[in-house]
Each structure stands twice: as structure tokens, then as C-alpha cells.
Length: 171
Image (tube, rainbow, N blue to C red):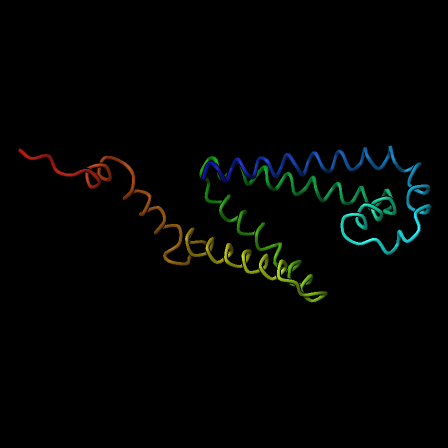
């Protein structure tokens, strides 16, 4: 579970840095945007990474501020999730479920626009993670809920668990 918390910390830090850098980058490059985006022939037809790079100069500052706020909210969510999972809190498991499930509608929407193997695999993986969280973490009362999870933890900790795991000593 600790490695998952470290991953959450990296995600939160990356999102916060991206939001901050995006706002600063837009301010510094806005005066050059018109020269860079209009001067290239066929810029509107650029696809892939170059197309995204070309469109980055055409976003309004308001749109970029909203994007920065969304990234900061995501960073706060990841940070809260990280702290809760690190401290082994039950609410953090629910928060992980909600954050993972929140991405599924966007993936379905993307699949309605165009179907690709990558999008389909991403949707299947996210649905598998959601099902795993529901069943393995016994969320929303499934498989006995929190009471069954607490009983499992009590059985697998303490001296009784150590005595059951070690072979008997011959006398």
C-alpha cells in the first residue's frame, strides 16, 4: 500500500507543477503565440504532438486558468488520497474508488467519438480496477463490508497470527 501512496504523491506533485507551469508558460509565450501559430503553412492540419502544441497557443487565458484550477483540484484529491491511504484510513479507499470511477464517463465519451484499441484497453483496465476495489476492499457493504474487513485484519495481526503462521516446536 505504501508504494501506491508514493505513486499518489508523484501524481499530486506533477499535477500541481503542471498547473503552475502552464499558467506561467502561457503568460510568457502569449505575445509570441500569433507569430508562431499563424506563420506555419498547414498548421491547422497538424496532427499528433505537433497539433496539440499548435493548439496550445490558441487557448484563451481564461480557458488555461480553468484548466489550471482543475489540475490543482486533481492534485489536492491525489494528495488527500495519498495521506489517507498512508494512514490506512477507510475513507481513503472510498475516495480512491470515487476518483477511479469518475474517469469512466470520460473514457466512454471518448469511445463514442472514435474507437481505438488504446481507448478500449484503458476503459477495460479502469473497469477492472473499479470492480477490484469494490470486491477486494469490501466497499459499500459487499462481501460483508467493513465488519468483515475488520475481522480479517484482526485475524491476520497480533500474536495469534504469528502463532498460526509458525510451525510448532517439538518438545
